[in-house]
Image (cartoon, rainbow, N blue to C red; front, side):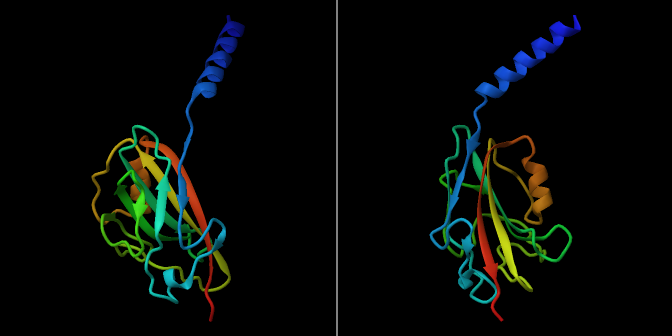
Length: 169
């Protein structure tokens, strides 16, 4: 009887994982390519405007996109969040210096984008995109943790773009 249950469980897991559709979003920018330097224009050394982004590959059933920009190399516990966005249209076009839409609290507890400004060395900036099966009804004081909590159970695809930045003194 136990052997029958084990075999049945293995067969069910095999079929569930074999036929599951895994969707991946593609995140790109005309300002920089993956794992390359982000121009000063998007940092504290420039105008601190947000870079243009395109999120593509949203699967059927996607109702909205979200974006979190995070620097895990920042010298504070948990790193530094630079941008929190939700209810982005599934077309995924985010123009340069984007000020519209649903923007939550960044690491400075301000709404909107803050540019890269590492105290030293080269930091990695993760532009993490998520396709959701719903739109979110969140307060503008929502931070990264609040957005991640609200997304639980609704993520149907993910993707990321990584940019590098070194502040020149």
